Length: 320
Image (cartoon, rainbow, N blue to C red; front, side, top):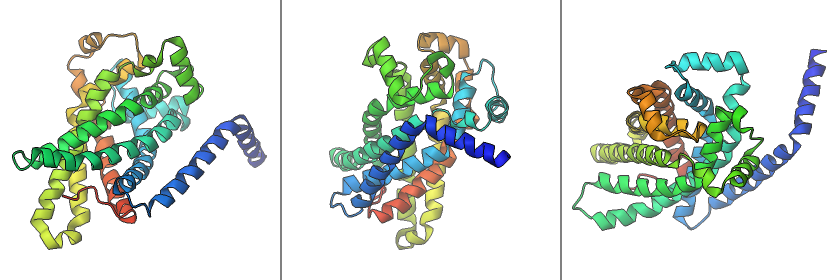
């Protein structure tokens, strides 16, 4: 009896979400075919973009539940630990509570990964030639990452805005899906409505990703110079250390900006100055543990995926 009830529930779910299932299946089919065909592409920037897109999709999907806890913790009226927030979500909403906003995460991460890695691969040699030997190579990594992330986030921000609201205050916004969310915001205001709270977001994530990639690339360069011909045997260990430090330091230093971003996204009418006055010193540590945990371990998985997927596409992120 219970098995039959579960089958009926599954069939009902597929019936009511058949359009979404069809769109997702079609998208995955086209995306998989494009990724497969790109392995033989003569364009290195394209191959780097596809490798980055795949890695970003896998990592964002894996860590979405941690991101949901992080968002809820930062929007809480009281300071609450990540573990207690996770318990609270599970008690009230079950497993489903951790998956809210996943569709925006899914589609956004595919495009975000491709745009960022393509641009980063494009800009890095340009900044290296422009700066020459006058400046430390870290400036090349930082500027290439900063510019690439800035342009990436201009495209990605509306997806993150919708994701944040689906994860937190969707009872207020009542979004049914991503297209509905975009249409609703544009109809109620203009396309600029999709960029509310974008200033602290751009600041937080351009700085975070720039620091993360700069630290990662600089440490990898250090290990390559240290181990020289033996680096291939030390590649995995070096990658883990560099990616962990990049993720932990970058996310920790920019936590305050993310608190501002999430509060502004969830409550678009509130002023940033008011958020600062309300939060005060808690801007620095609110949701910090979830953010550092999320970004440090995500960074390890992410950069190792980029390394392994890059071998399939015959590209390397740290090719200096």
